[in-house]
Image: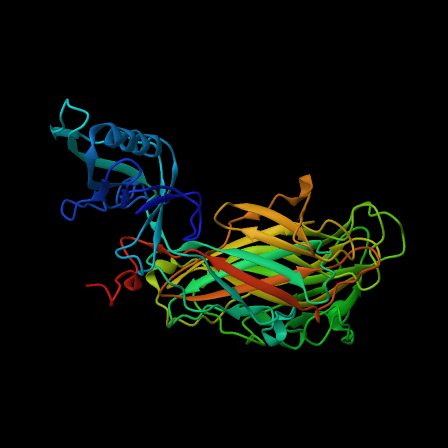
Length: 472
């Protein structure tokens, strides 16, 4: 057991609780075999309260320090320095066993037994120290890093969603996601990360409705032909002229219980997204371009300049629960929903509105939990080779250049939503929706993204591999 400079087996050793030195005379320091207590974290708040959190725990063990009195006192001082400051404590049952790491905090030191300590400094003394170290609720394993297959940007073929390898550990762990455009030119303007952990029976993948699976209202409006365009997922988009005053009757597209192009609608709460865009000839948006889903309006398009040709965006429409008005806690993972509905109206604006489909991201419901994050302007420039790192453990963002150097973020780089986590014993799915739309750089449903994930498994006590089968 050792204090390390960082949570890495190869990190510099700050202090070892298992040491024997012959600098002056033989001195031994070691944890005794009996009297260990790993402690257990406790959930704070009433048992039935929402938003409960895990509290810390206290690691206790007896420490024996044996040797000449003057030398053992030096060791005691070293123990005190590390116990009385935060750090990283590595533990393993044998030198060849898998290590785990505890994040330690400042705490009250335990009792010190001096029954075998002598006034004569030349005599050997034996100190018995009851070490008590406050630590984080869970121990961490070594970092696991996985490079995923290239992710696409089109939900029509499921290319923007990937199922992650089975997670190790006992409880959900913060996930770090690193993204880079396969072309090397990220230039991301908007980015959404959506993590869903579900039971194996649920398999909560996003649900997509192509234009062919949406009901269109009115003889005019969205009834025009479908235009194929690489910026648009699936079959392309339909366009309708906007009016400056108010919504024209019949200009709407709706799900109305129609079967999705991809996925299955199961009971739960969803975030509805629409693939939208605009084309207009004037330089300014006075009233902007509004779309309405029931009572919510969404602004689409730049604030003070004409969008580039082919401009497209993922617009958040609303959070909906299906079936409507039902407490999802009374439903099961097998409940498939019918009678669901969501509609989008072309409300008002200048120029032409485009629409390409609707995407439902599972948020919660029977057998699932999720975390979503929306990032605006995470890129530091158009056409710059860079990698965006979303660090779930530190809850920070970082843009790194091709050489690994850190690149600055702006005030607009503050994320909205939750940092991602990965959950053991569940099916973990990651959805990445990219927007590379910048002036002169139209977005593309054909874009591909390199994705790397990493995390440290979190354990209540020990991982199964911490028990070294070769140890006696």
